[in-house]
Length: 555
Image 1 (cartoon, one colour):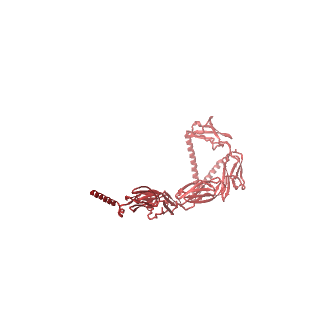
Image 2 (cartoon, helix red, strand yellow):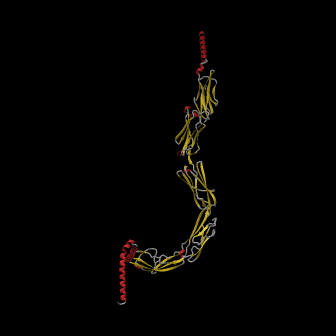
Image 3 (cartoon, one colour):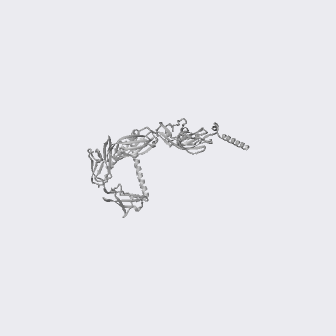
């Protein structure tokens, strides 16, 4: 029994010792429990949510939770952990996770970094068109990007890097980044592409690399220092087409110059050309109203434009009116020719009719009365009108041709009555009739119509008389033509004979001229000799005369 009591006492002591072992001593529990948070590094896209797990090693934790100004919701828990959902994270912050164990509280912190990728990269060229040697501002800005200290902006011209900037020292409170540089415009920079590249490197926060680029902007360079010039006649005739032009020099790029031309309110349709640094526009104008008007030329290139005006005067001066009483009169008919100004001409012009004996009075027509003759056929008449406009003398002329009708004629000069052909050669009957209208010619030989259109080889059979008749609407006339066909030898002999006669004639004339124009010195040297010869000749003539007298008187 005593042994049982001792056993019970040992068991009680063991239980007390065990209970004492289970009771924590101050300071020992603090050293053995820990508080942790997950994730250990938080990177959240702007406006997104974050799940946070807060846990401890304390076997029987007391009050616990997280402290943050962000909107939080506990979504789950366990004996030693709690899980929270943080919504609409828009700012960088530090979260505190805490647990208490045996009256002791411990906490740990979590840094939350909010990032915004560079989605809106805006590039501006100010101005978009820049004059040569002027400065252009290139500006790039990124809206709503974070964190700025991890942002780099790079300006590019084509593929060439112009400028690079990071924002390590920029105020974190600012959510806007930009970079600006000035570029001096040169001709070779025209149509160059400019762009901006933004890079957000989050590798230091456990994230990746975000990059974006702006839209490409094209820089335009121009040179426009001169005013356009208009080339147009100061006088324009109503209804008549007139070429005009507008020219601009020392312009770049000349091929892109725009021309707008107007005559009063009438817009023209110019044809534009360019070469080098010169551009010009050609157009055709047709004024429809008389009086003073204005031709204008507006030239534009990019943001620049220049306008030039040139006054013009539009006048009405139709050609004068030439009237021939009868354009096709018969020979011997009296006709009137009148020259007068057009009714639309104001003031009345000065008139002159070619062939008229006198000039008419101002405002009066000029006239001429004549009897049509054969030689008047084909005669041209001209009516001249002159008008003074804006100090310039203008002249217009109207011409008409007179056609005199007359009966056919077969003249010897054009239709010889005797014709000689050489045997074996190609020959045609030579006969051209005169008359108006042009007569039709028909020639017959031995009652058969002879072909006048094609040459024929001459034979002895062609010798004979041909009867030719010319006919037109006014009558007819006939003529006989004698044709003689000679042999080739005869023709050659005749030709040689003619050549000999001509040569002899030329020789005699040459000798006579030589004798008549010999130098005077030679004449003087030969004068005594000629005098002796002359005396001898006179003596001989005298002797002959005496002999003739003697014979006449039978002495």
